[in-house]
Image (cartoon, rainbow, N blue to C red):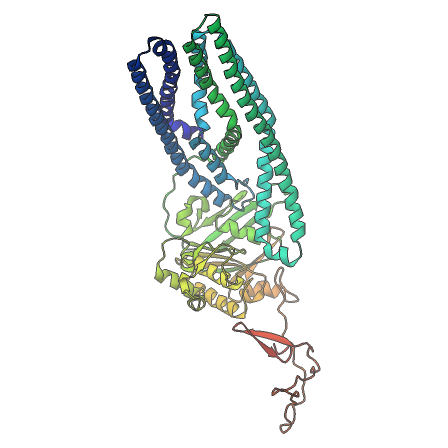
Length: 617
């Protein structure tokens, strides 16, 4: 931040120059009243009064013009800083999102807005006008030493009030900001999990938890507001008392024939002008303190993420060969690594299944394979080149990644499939057809132009997952990583996913599939078994599944056997089904031995269709 501000030092010099001229011209009204009382009133010259008034009017207009110019210069500075910093913050927030190695900074944009609003507000001018305070005091001393002493006393009191205000409010402001951030993050978490909160009866509990967080921030905010409010009231009181005392002292000097009425009025005006920046600074103290804290957080953040520019060559699109060498990944704060020396090699075009118990590091490995996270030790290589040698933009066009948690962005379905870039209708439709979601989309009221919004897409979990799969396949990637791609899919979706995997294999696309269901592993070439962050086995599908012939592979659900229907004696052909009285439908049959007696409902096209029993369903 210091470097950014320093790069615009010429504009700040211009603002300081305009402030110098403005403060110099602000002496005009004081000398105007001095001339009126000491010259016009004694000479009774109307022409003198006219030209003095005309001159002071021009001075005030010039002051207004210069204040507008310096305000616009500050706006130019803040807009330039925003354009330079906001993309960096945005990229860092996305890059650091979910990365346990990097500290989160979700308040980055808000801190930038706070700093920018203060620079473009009126409080910043107090910083440019305050240096003129000694000059105003020196002029008052030149006019009258007695009046100068009163002015110095008033300034000393105001400075003391400001120092006390700083000491009392600094910790309260820091704590208030921290508690407000905690409260806001908790509200975001609750809103994202609203379904669980409402269905599990957690509303009162989470409200109580939020209330405790909110009350903490509110108490510090109240204390800060009380301190600042008292400071502002005391500042106004001191300024008014100083003006009255100077008028009183001036009147006494007039009676003592030591000063003229013009001198008294001019000194009072200058003293008032000298105290204005101090009063303005203390009045905007809360905004100043928040902007100062935001500046320090932004400066520390930019220094933390600043890296020397690395020249990267544009490499050819990867063929799909992937290898890892002794991958280690450690989450800060956890004693054991998540991955412990994972090494394997995959040829271009191979399809790899990744299985293992929960917590074995499967999703972590997926994030490392696509470059979302950086390994603590070891390397990931595409076609022999380390992943760090690829630029993010170049690599992103050749990688498909489907995470467990699916989110769609605000926009149309076509824009989401096109990865929020320029919509190429042919490529969008092609990706949708590859993901088997084209027919689903065209049946929507507006087809591909259907609007979705964050958190309120109106789509089921399976539909969102299939659309996200189309987004992953957009642009014909060479390496595909799917993390639980069938977690929200029904039978039709499972069948479609199998077709997608078969097509990817036919096209020679390297595919990694993390799965707990055995059905999705039917088309993989080899299976990688992870346990406790290490490679337990890595072999062909037949070898791995053969080694676990007595039971399911680790982390893979056992396939449920289809229930054998019980023998049911057929009804005589001539015997009609019993009909309930008053209805034209057959009455319900009693539960057949060997089946569950409870009836079931099958949803067909969104409409319930009763069936005889659960086995039939």
